[in-house]
Each structure stands twice: as structure tokens, then as C-alpha cells.
Length: 503
Image (tube, rainbow, N blue to C red; front, side, top):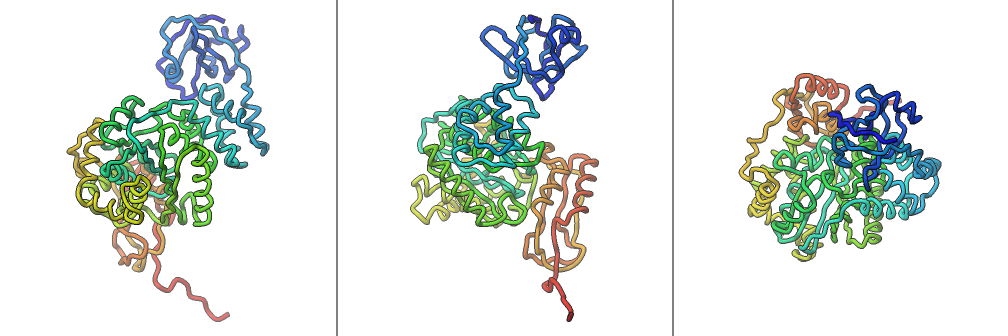
């Protein structure tokens, strides 16, 4: 049927098109049916919503559909029932434990990007990967398909370095130090990051406190070719666009399938033209990878996948048993990272990890001799060169390069937990810390999060402060307090852990 476009000021989040009930009956369309809209040479897919918002002869276009194609008010389009995509059959195949062929994976990814698959079908695909996994042939095919359905970046500064943490450790603002250290040494490092999936702050969430993170590929190319670095949000680009769609399902389900994680990370690196990639795998209790053996197995997968993509990959297995630094949450982490760059020093865990990772990249890029990278990275940090490079990055990304840590606002609704007894800090629960920060509003509320005053191994006295929750609203603060009381984020014990009597 041919109908006129009516643009509706609604954001459905589901790429919805709105059709009058009588019009739908005539066309035999039902709620959630997939239809394609043909306008000239452009084809857009959407899910049907039956609504009285539109009259007969009209089709309502939501704001999210407008992101796919800029329809104009009153434009005549043809609406055609689409039927079930072939890719749904391939998703069912994976749900049943089958191995997907390259062409089947390509079809699924293309249909995700074209929005031919609905949210429930995408969630089914993600869930099937969590349950049944992917072998390396499937992961390589998935990675290339995700990259090639989007744009590719070609930067005229070589070699191109990249670093990525698989996440899981609260307070991991490390790359905000690593990127300017590496760029200050003369290497090129265009850093794209995702927003938080299950954490309290992704790198993009933290950088956004200083500067813009949403740029076009042409803008990124200009910035990087000028100053050698950037720290931007990958979701604002058309880099591996299927990744940002599947991430929504991962976030809703609180899962992160290993095969999809590998493809997600490496497809962005492939699309950015990265030649040397360092993967950070935090390991420890309460993170994604809890044992060193698991980390080594995952490292081998990253290295093998890199070979198949023509990239040189190294992996750093890092300590992830407790939060990095003393802050968790976008604004609090931004403050801590900026302070470390300005002073050339900071919390031991943050400085140790940042200079360690930066040192590996300096050696991979050939600017530091083998075994000397970490020393060189620390010298660059302590000399102030990394801070000057960070100022350039902030300025080029539209922020104020003169910003000071105290200029960054944090949540003013606070509550401090104190030690209920004297003893030693024997454990800090990463998942509980993340849960408290998210309950407080992070990462959506930039000022929300946690300020930690203790680390594992430290001695505390009864009444000593352990951590302060920051929130932007009393309601969120109350939720975080309740969450903290339900869990045991910080464990305090004496040197005698247990007493067992004579049986």
C-alpha cells in the first residue's frame, strides 16, 4: 500500500512504524509484524504498531526510524509486509547447538544492521551465543562481518596502536593515562570505547566528563592525524554497527558471551585499521575471568583471531582482584585520572597498571627497547608530557584543556560506611562495588559512584571510613545504601580467620 509519511515526535527504541487500525486490517498487518518502507532507492524496515495517532492513508514514523533514513513529512512511501527473515532460521540453528557457516553469520549480521531482526530475535541470538558458544571459524567470520557492514577508517599515520580492556574491574580508568602516554611517545593511538555494559563506567563514559566523545569518522581522522590520538565513543560511529545493537541485548540480559565479546572488540580494531593491539585481561575474583588459566585460554583466542585478521596482538593478564585506584563512577574516575596525569603520580594500582600497559605498547611500536617500556612510560608520565598530550586531546575534542579535578562536579548526596570492627581488609567484592555504584545512578548519572578509602591488606580500626557513596538524588542514594547493606562489599577480619575446636 502507498501512504503518506507523518513524522511523530516519539522515540520507540524498537524502530516502530505506526499504522491506523483500519489501514492495518485492510493490509492484513498485525502488531510487531515486520514491514519494509520503500522510498525511491531506499528501503527501511520497521515493526508495526497499531495506533490511533495516525489516520487512514498515513504511516507514523518514529524518531529512531528517522535515524535510518530522513523521511520528510507528507512523503509518499510504499509499505510491504516483509515476512520472517531467513536469518531467523540460522539463529534457531545456533540455539539448537549447530555451527554457523560464514554466509549464515553474514546474513544474521546484515539483517541486524538493516533492522530486519526485531529485539526479541536479536536477544535470542545473543542468548544462543552465551549458551552454545562459537568456535574460532565462527568468531573470525562474525568479526569480519561486523566490521564490513560498517565504515572503515584509514589514518595516514603509521603504525596504529590500540589497547582494550575486557573490563570487569571497577574503577578501570587506566586507558585515560595509557593513551596520552603512548601518543606523547610519538605513536598513533585512535582509541574507541564502548559505554558501560555491566560496569559503573566505561572509558567513553569517563572521557565524556572532560570532552565530547561523539564524532564522525572524518573528524576522528582529522584529530588523530593532527595530534596522534583520540578517545571517542565507538557507538557514535558506523564502526561495526551490529555491535552497538547487540550490546543493548547484552546489557538487558546482563550477559557477555565470550565469542561475541571477541568479535565485538576485534571488529572495532579491524575497522579502525589498528595494526598492533594490546588486550588487557583483568583476572581475579569477581571479574569476568577469575583464573589465570582461563585468562591464558582467552589470550590464545585473541592472538589467534588477530592472526586471522592480519593484526599483531599481545595480551596482558592483569590483577583484577579489587578496584583500581580509589574511585568508581564517571566523574569520580575523571577526577582521579586527571589528578594522576597532572601530578605524574597517583594510586599505586592505577599508576602501576597504566605504565605497565603503556610500556608494552611502546615496545610493540618500536620506540622503547625490550624490557624498557614501563620505565619509559613512567618517565613520560612524571615529566608532564602525558598531561600535555591529554590537554591536546581534550581541546581537540571540544573540551576545556584547563579543567582541574576540582572543577568536575560529583554527586552531592552522600553516605559514608565505616568499619564495624577493627581488623584487616581481607577482600573487596568487585561485583558488589559495581552494584552499589550502579544503584547510585552510574553511569547515566555522571556524578554518581563510590570513593574508596581502603585497599586489601590495610589495617582499620572500628569507626574508620571505608567508602562514601555519591548520588545525584536522595532516592538513588537510598537505593545504593540498601544495596550496600544487603551485600558485603568490604570484608574485615582479624589475623585469626577461623577457630576449630577439638571434635
